[in-house]
Image 1 (cartoon, helix red, strand yellow):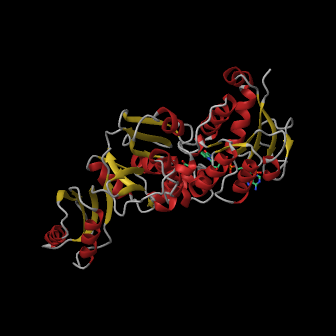
Image 2 (image 1 turned 135 degrees about the horizontal axis):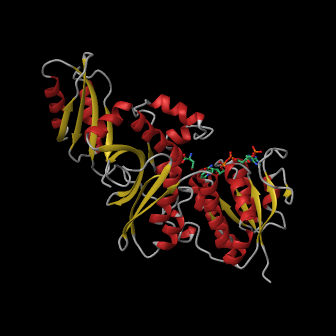
Image 3 (image 1 turned 30 degrees about the vertical axis):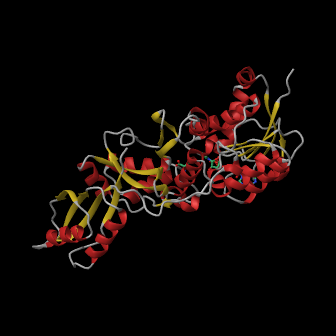
Length: 428
Ligand code: NDP
Ligand code: HSE
């Protein structure tokens, strides 16, 4: 009879409890699928006597996750505490040193320390797996490292933070402003303990950095990402974008250009009829493009107990089956140094302005844009009761720095009532 695969789980919050539930509920199914029993030897969390709504009495308890990670009766250390450093990193390193496989959902740790952890795991001959770290229940890591392994990947793109997508779609559907919907999301428990991780685009940036490393065979380069959050998006932006046939999404894009790897997580306009434009609520969507497959679209729950635990278990079962794959798809010591593109590829932009309503104002704006080499595709002025005219311009494709030059020059014309907002329109 084959030996069981014994888990040590550090972190019994949303995801950890979900993993315990699957191991308990599907014991027979997991054994049938892998030919091995999957068992839990020990668990760890901060507070021992908390009621977590799940049976834990059969498992040993460790106060210290590092002690849990190196126990003799643990084959796989399952890290579900979170945080890029601290106990999560210390315990992961200890597990690898002790020759244990590691499964984690911790995108922050992988985005910052992925390279050194991958090298350590591969040198030790153990697995380090993280399906749950990107887009929750969507099996996007497996899709890239295995399903699309025969492709040269040209672009990965997606909506990877459910909280931001919830906020943006709720603003759109209910006509509510950002602050109101942010407060709603907070009350619903959607926001990370530090909400900047969500609305500042950092959490989604961590995920994009991981995907880009796998897609393009480069070391994880979170610091090379261009990140903007959704905090400055107003209900006016959402309504005026809709009026022009677009939706606003916090969209991650990583693509090869002739000038290096362009990777950005920023609010973008996408056509309202596109799959990304139609994406509602907390759902995630990842689009992968390869030379042979063309384009595939993966859509599903990006967070929550069940979906995230489902992804953790997929990694556990791969280890039980003996399936191995390099941490980032190719051996960590062969990952190339990232070459971030100095500037993003040209795109059309949406520019929202509030102008002082007097003769010759639009002519000044058009002149400034023309002088910077930015061509206007569409322009619309909305009715207004106050002295400031809301004006919306959609440009033809232009370099972002040309548009930034134009916006800087607009400031000197004396016709702006407030700083213009420029949002990229993405080809999807
Ligand atoms: P929670 O905050 O719900 O749970 C964290 C758990 O870790 C708690 O049980 C906590 O203990 C425990 N913990 C924290 N610090 C320590 C420590 N020093 N020693 C021992 N235990 C500790 O987090 P989630 O379950 O939501 O997230 C876990 C991981 O999964 C994170 O990396 C997160 O980014 C990732 N993730 C989460 C998703 C989600 O939908 N929630 C989706 C995708 C990824 P205690 O309960 O006693 O306080
Ligand atoms: N805060 C994240 C989100 C959780 O909203 O998508 C899942 O990583």
